Length: 236
Image (cartoon, one colour):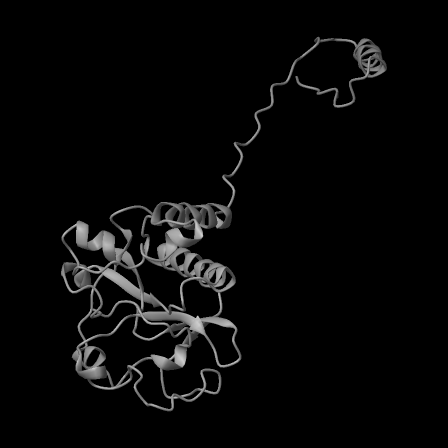
């Protein structure tokens, strides 16, 4: 994951300063053919590039709307893929249009024309890695209803009526079920291996001798049979 941070401090959502305890993640996509992060994030930090229209979301009400998400995934000026955190993860975002704002971290994937498999593969992978990161950080399970897209949120009655991301993912053979499975796979791969149970050892006593020479003879015989971890222990 190529994670950067540029908090949208001029957005009314950030200035409201309301916090949540994150219990889930909601995946969105922007619904516009513009894969560049500079469309939504500003000012230019040297990587984003300049937004010539200055219509990014780092303003009180971008495009006159009360909208703000916790992050975006898309292209930097040079064309490489990155994730930008745009709100503190525990801030209440304005992304769901419903009760999920009180429980879910929301991020947007910048859409292109929806037909480029290379771009889709790159942002899909970045989104999987971001969700795995957030799941691990907040103990979120990669399953429904804790990891969902906007359209699933609407069906659950916790988000407004939007189609993202199911108008896009199936075009490339993916769904939210495959997405959740990929997040779980990444989490499982990163989990430390389960410690092995300590081995138990059972010792076998072959004899007790009052004459040391007899004990020495038995020790020699056992070693000749191939047993190396043998010894004589003296006790009164």
